[in-house]
Length: 244
Image 1: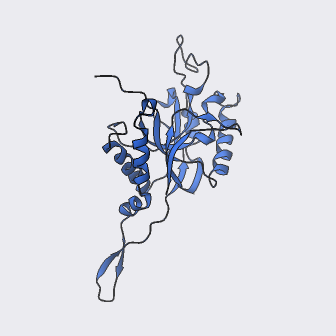
Image 2: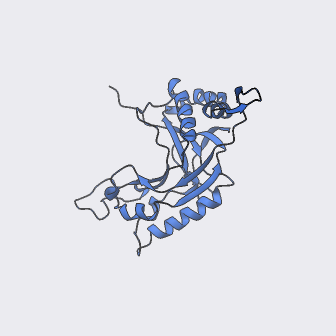
């Protein structure tokens, strides 16, 4: 079997908007100041992701030399997010004087996101990635994202991962730490992946609210590799996007 091509792009819901930037900037900055302090957890500063990179990944795609990218862009433009939401949310029922009940379709409210808590996909004692999950008690956000992902997978444009979609915003990733050689606090020689004992970090930030009740505004196809911005932040290049 030939090796899987390296991903070049990803479908996502950007989390940085005019309404969310202040919340996220303030709370990520406080988190950064805490965990990078030598008196606290002494985590390398580069491990904390820049605010401008925060997003919910729906899936990754591979377009070497941009071959196939135009097809993904065209597919994205055909998607009507409000219709997807309307199909997910059940209609309200209206009872008439005759006691007859009929469904009433109303224009669905915009999806909003609250990020709360901190988790890892690995062992907490040897973690390299920490993420904030969205609060999705009714499951509407997850279903919406699953439908978006399925559209691209069925068109053969997105890598099939054969696992449930785990919505998450990456807050910390040690792969961005320069000169990483060994596990922090670990034993042995030269290891490529820097890991940290995140047990106390996860406990401290278990109920931490990163952003609260912020409307989702876009669905975007972005290029891998965040770029430095003029204000010192970082962001991913947007190839195409649609409004919700």
